[in-house]
Image (cartoon, rainbow, N blue to C red):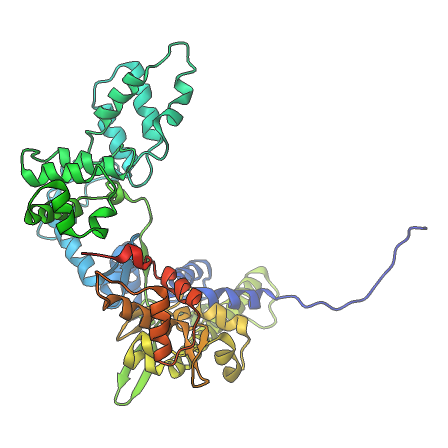
Length: 489
């Protein structure tokens, strides 16, 4: 086959830089968009802030941590455990920190609640960051021989985020037994017992039972409820909740009141001693949209309080000359076109977000009035088709965007759900079914919890045709255990 050059003409669809920028802005949340707008403000001389906003934006840039709590009353903070902390709670915590006298070299102005501006940030020393840092700090303060310190560091490497050992001791110290000097199991056990005295109580335990035992041993073991609790945790912990207290009291030959006191003491212990040193980053969000009820209608508004109001610098724009081909004139002309397209893309992004949010609220009106039980089935095409948008555009708009409602702050994607059939031939959303299941489980008798088959029958009585395995799937998605594990006395 002879090789040669061939010239072909073809058409292909490519995204222009302006369209790529518009798609990028469409996916950004309010906080991310604010950072992007400030970055463009610094890079493009044709963009400027109105005079009445320059000082406010400068304060926000100098103190970004206070922007979210000072400018928006609906900003919330999501902790690693999934709990929501309102802005007022965060301010209360800031007041507590400002009144607390820090033991560092920094001087604190208690009247203003701020660090002295003369203090260099390098003079503020922080030791504790993670659980490992906290344990390693205590290890360095504990006298160990060289061999014992090696064992301690090896066990420290095996501690998980909960503060428990992630593997058996023999596995963790297997490489130490291959050294020239053999280490006995007694020496490893002795080092382990010293490490188990570290703070927080319960760390370096091999299992949950041992962690609870370590915490109980730091109490007064002469107390009868403490001694009984130590006996109870030696066995299966599930029996404490799955067995009638009267039967447990008879088995241990103690009074039922004493048994209940011991069980309550065990419940007060911390099963995750290292949980307070979580290394997960706190995620701050600001709702992109608000919805409020005015009369009989629900009004949707953009939450643009954090966004700077950018505009074209008319002084630089007036310096552009049409017939001038100099480098300076071309520089101004290029930046003017980019600034206008950037502002137009932001306006388009806000309009699309508002239209999609209004369409979602139009479909989910019953959710705002009745809660999760009133959620109706909704898919992307139900919103995209009336608005003449592509489904991928709706997906981009609803990703990482939040809406503030009277029932809380929700991600826009929360309102999309699949459906299940009803006996009348209609449809019911999976979110509403989950809410009904949770309501049934919350009101069930603790001694005789409802099985998946019984829950399926109760849903059938309400006209919802659903299989038992689907009920089990929804129950597991809500992290609700099976009926055998929910049994309480």
